[in-house]
Image (tube, rainbow, N blue to C red; front, side):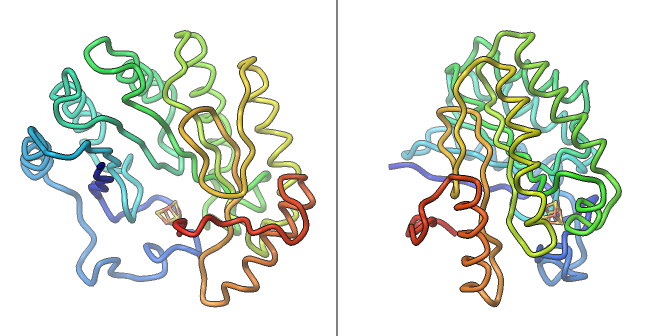
Length: 255
Ligand code: SF4
């Protein structure tokens, strides 16, 4: 058995996606948005020691974890305390990538390549990107950050390659929606070219990818009109050659 544990470092975010419940509500959890305290982080991590189940940790739920003022320190601390995987078996970062510049990329790769835990502990940095141009990015992310994220994503993959590490995997995500569907092919060719640079196989998926390889994946928008969102997603995946016409694209356990 395994436990998949999301610890939300913050419900603040530095962009404003119209699809996101974090950005749609002034009070994401019915309370003023906040940052997890250092003491809470330490105490939750300490509580994982000796857990009967294997723990898979993700420091994110709503919000953008890298905007936490103590993000680097918290993640470094988690890995320092995780010698021999005594607290968690794996770690996955979900981010919009705006604040994942060169020094953070180096930090992520350094943590992933530490000899003090299993090599596949820091499995993935999941890039919530959703656009292939500044104009589309402004529409679907509500911010002028396309070039910054593109630079950061290239920097992250190349930093990892320079270190000769397979970890963390880069999962580059595109949530298909009416305002970005026209960008899907360009998204695939742009970021497919980056992953080709690594010389290793990567996955192209219509649902959550596995941790086995880097991946580009196209997800349906979760929304009130789910059949329409799923139809658009299926059409785009068929156009991209990821899916056959009429194929069911979302696993039953997916959300
Ligand atoms: S980047 Fe993530 S947390 Fe921030 S508004 Fe978009 S979907 Fe929500």
